[in-house]
Length: 217
Image (tube, rainbow, N blue to C red; front, side, top):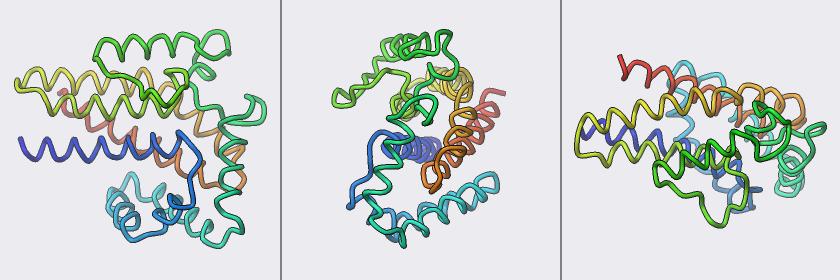
């Protein structure tokens, strides 16, 4: 049981890391941490999984390029704005509604579905993050919380039910639009830092889905 809890905590940390990375522009302090030994160790551990080796290497290459980028923090902030705070034509907007909604507008059905899920599981969106509920950062934060919720169940069957809910969430609320979002990032992120991050996220979500599918068998 302790191994199960520890493994789930590691999974949740990855979702929360990506949620944080895609929720706001990085500060200079953030960038310094990304170049530090702790991040190197973390990425080395992730890269030991064969399915993540290539996307981890691509992200590390982007980090290496960032070290020699002039005005790195300002330029990366400009990349963030150009991608995520732009228009559908020029950017890669981080909302599920833009990819799988019916109207092509914000706050479409995916956002409504997320609001319902958060209410069902009593998992609240962070108050300071005033974005539609289908923003990628909100969905990833929810997934991290759903993982920890499984750890908090005293009954094994209830824990298994929450694990199955994670699998369903990944398949129906994340992987139904993440590939298109990753493609848009790759096409429009000239420097490549955020494109590499989102491609790593996509690879991890696919791997996590396979893990959860195995859990359900």
